[in-house]
Length: 345
Picture 1 (cartoon, rainbow, N blue to C red):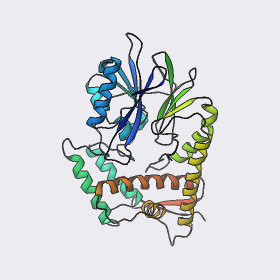
Picture 2: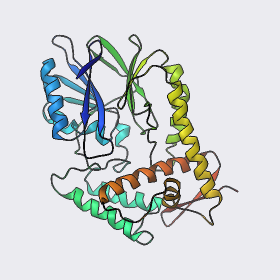
Picture 3: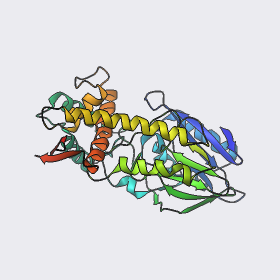
Picture 4: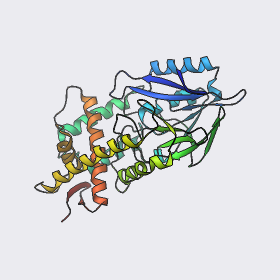
């Protein structure tokens, strides 16, 4: 735990088993007799829990005096949320993060979520008839998730929370933070900004050295379009702020980072344009994704990590195709629940 700004402490947590293996969460102790704030809840593992317990103990903070602001509902940000809630902490999150039971990096263990998964997989072209081997990999993972106490990247424990609204104030330790929408990485991601102290907690919206995932498998969410819009106004909105992302180092000048991220997405969009333009016929999201990312549909020895990777590229590709569709650069049709994409003539 290090003090990264007056009265603000950065805690780095680790998960040695996954590709996303490090995250920074932030603790703002309250003034005497007041509540404290934790920004995000890290990984669902014993090492992260012990590190957080140690940090709270050093600051003399009890769980029942702790508020937890979850920026979005990905596994590395919400892992300890249920445990913290069970110990008395109050959890806050944008309810838009719960609009789908099945999403890029998580789904609940409910039957509703598994039913929704079947529909979503069919949408992107993963079906028992068309892709039997890949289908069986997904079904095998489902069986694991149903096992009591089974912890995986894709299945997190549900937790109660209070809803966050835009511009809602969070005042702790002499800071006055407002909740700010950061759409793109997820539909309902939110950050915290204190204009007086020029501090922004940007979650996964803008990271130095990483191109954030913009991922969905649902039509008409326009996530990539919203993400581009957010980046184009980022410098103006938060000029002069020190920006604390959840991964890698803080920074002040966002211009070069924005340019790098946009360039990466523009190149991927160009590649997808090329793929559908020279295809022999309409393509599923899966067919486009495997070409765009050079992924083989054959099962890998490490089945779970392969499925996680495939889930990510399917949703990233969907976002790009949706952007091209919104721009009038490709067409889509639904046949028997499967979306097919082709060049707009």
